[in-house]
Length: 482
Image 1 (cartoon, rainbow, N blue to C red):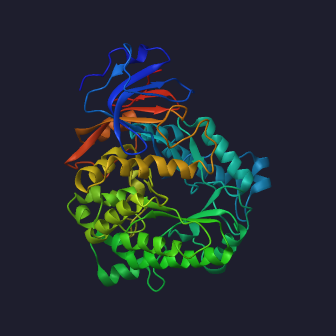
Image 2: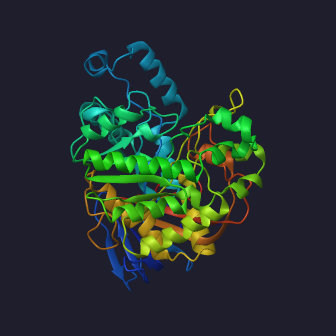
Image 3: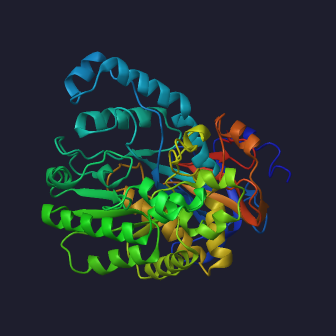
C-alpha cells in the first residue's frame, strides 16, 4: 500500500484527518474531521471537511486510542547505593541487584515496549512490577513511575507491587504477585497480611496458583500431556476457580476497596466474578485476557511446535469450549455496563528463556500488544462483537479504570472535543501476516518473536496512532508526523 500522504512528515503541527467512519461513544459511526495538535485536546467536527484535511480511504476507521492495563516491561532504574541502603529488603545485595537489573534492561527497553504499543494503536499501558527492584512501597513506586514517565513514548501507569511488610501506595491499585505461580510465591498468612496492609485500597491479582496437591512434575509424570499443553492442562479451570475463590475470601476479610481479577481465561471464572460482585462491599472490575479470545488448546496443537511453545501462559489457555463461553459472556457483560476490559499481558521474554529446562517450560507469556488490532478483529469478524463492544473493552472502560490512578492532561475514554486526543486509525479489512524480521527492526527489539508467526486469516492494519495530539505513522516504520 502506498503512503497515505507523500509529505505527511512535512505537515505543520496541526494534522486534520477526514474519515467516513469515526467511532462515537454511543456506538454510531459518523463522518467528519478530527484535528490533532501535539499536547492539545481533540477537536471533533462531525460532517466537516476542510480543504487541507488528510482524507483517509473510505474503508478506514478512527476509534479511540486503545488503553492496555496489563503489560510487562523489563526496564528498571538502577538505585544508588544510598537508595538501596534505605529501601533494601532482607537478603538483597547491592552488586547482585544491579547486575540483575542491567541484565533485564538489556532484554527489553521501555522504548521498545512503547513502539510495540504504538504499532497496535495503544496510547497508554499499565506496567506490571515483576522486575528487579520492583515498585514496592511509596518511595520505590515513585522512583519507578518517574523512570517510566521520563523515558516512555506513551503514558505508562506503574502498578505498585504488594508485599506483606511494605506500605501501600495510597490511592493506587496494588498488584498481588502472591497469586502467581513463579512469582513471589506468597501463601497462607503472609498473603493475608499483605492484603491487610492494603486495607481500604484497591488491589488486583492473577488466577494462577498451582494445584495444592500435585506439582507440575507429578502432573506431567501422571498425565504425560503434549509439551505444548503441559501448562495449559495443569493450570486448568479448577485451579483458576480455586485461586479466585481463595483470593476473594482474603479480600473480604481484609476489607479492600476494589478487587480486580486480571487476565481472566475462561467463562466460568468471569461468571464467578460477576456472581460474587453482587454480594461484597467492594467493587470487582474484570480484566479479560485478550489472547484467550484468540488462542485455545486446539489452535496450539495446529501450530508448529516451536511456535506453539511461545504461547506458554499461566493460567492455562482454555479449551475451545471454555474459550467460547468466555467470548460470549464477555460480550454480554460489556453490554450490561459492567466495568470489564481487555488486558494483553504482553510478556516480552527472550525466546531462549521460554525453552524447556529439565523437562519443564520456562517463562510464560506471548507478545501481543502490537497485534491488538488483529485480536479485536477476530471478535468483530467471527464472534458478533460490534465496534462499540470493542471500543468499550479496549478504550473506554480501561481508560476510565486507569484514570483513577494516573493523572492525564485531559479527559480520557471519550470521543469528543476537549478530550485527550488519543486515536487509533486503521483499516479493518486489510489482510495481515506477521513479519518477524520487519517487526524486530520496527520495534527496535532484536529478540522479537511472535506466536502469530505463520498464522493465516488475520486482518487489520493500523495506519496512525495519535497520542495526546501527536500523530505517529505506524503502517510500516514508526515515525512522528507532527
